[in-house]
Length: 129
Picture 1 (cartoon, helix red, strand yellow):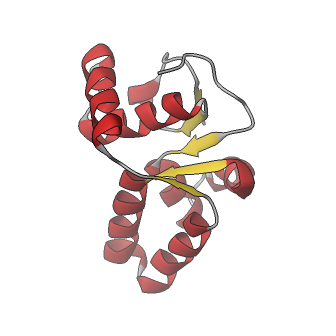
Picture 2: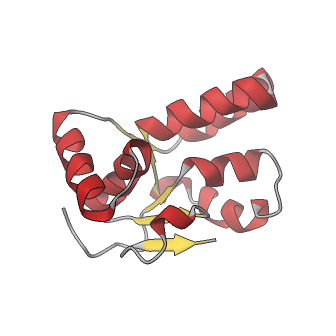
């Protein structure tokens, strides 16, 4: 796992995607990051979380818009090595499973994590919106 981030690569967590697609008050701030599709990494757990939430509350059209946007980015699979990295991050930073997977994905990719989730506050490589 790396501590340095390459500012050209970004991971937007589930809350950011939902905020953007749901046209929440922070949608414009997240849009600036989500428009950078060539630099965007989407952890598989984010695909799960966002798709599920949008299908439940936003409808199929919004959920499919998300899938279309996410498919143009790099999807980071969750394998055994990613699971070990996430477990280590979870223990080190007291993060819940999904948060640990997202953070470990960003760290292992040398990417900046963009979020509005205060669970990540103070962690290296995190930008709070």
